[in-house]
Length: 348
Ligand code: PMP
Picture 1 (spheres, rainbow, N blue to C red):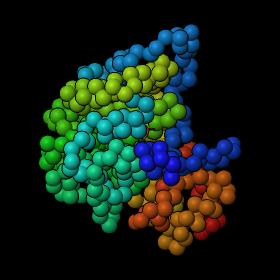
Picture 2 (spheres, protein in one colour):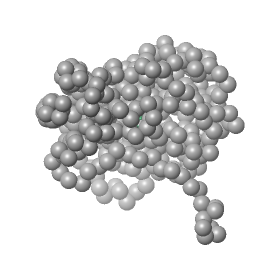
Picture 3 (cartoon, rainbow, N blue to C red):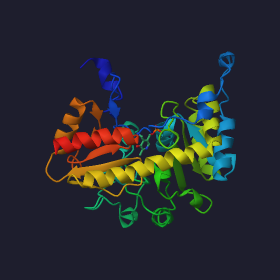
């Protein structure tokens, strides 16, 4: 090892789902939304001449649109470059004690990567044999808590009362609820942020707003939390939100009709898809997300994953304990899901 190598921050990076280079694939592996952004986003004329200027470091227009949408004050909203950026900033800001932070053993696989990179001690808490998070397991000394609701990759959602149970039992630490998938049928904990100053709720434009490519995420919480987050962000990089993101993000928020319509389509396709594949010997966890976590009674998940890929259908397989025999299948259009169902019929 060279002398300088011992001073490097060595990390094992998060591995995102594959983005295949070939066209004409059916891509059900990264929980994107098949319907695309609102026509208002697509029709927006950007004044590219303005790009010579720095963007508004506060992204005020977007923060205001998000705050109004949720009935909050702008002081309750923080925006970032996708919820990955928002959550990374939150780890840096709020998880600063010697105590372990807690998150489920089966969950978004970025949490342990951030904790490792930022040298935050952590402990994973096992979900039960039905893959449910148990709130009682989070009532012990800790340095902070994060979990997605609905959880990923299981898709299982818990009611607001469940979130409140955890938040109220942990008033001395920050509890982050990652609501990346909540619009597909979950219950949001946003209503609790007035009541609990230790709760941060994180959302994204990547799934329900079908804008993964724009990279917008946001956090909502007590003004003090948002102030602390902004202090860290401005100590790191002031201009995270570029001008097109700010403007197009506002356009999306303003088109509630389109938003509701595309979510309803995803939900109805999800319910139909679950029924169809259960006839083929699959068991699906109860999903309130834009994906389904499924296992087959006979065929190994890895085998199905590989065969699907040979047929240009991409789904996600995690080679990890407890879930290696499950596939996470993003809900695409009805036509895409029908092609996948036909493929499964042949395979089974
Ligand atoms: N949280 C969860 C649970 C996710 O699955 C994802 C998507 N990979 C994210 C956060 C991050 O999404 P984005 O950075 O696109 O907002």
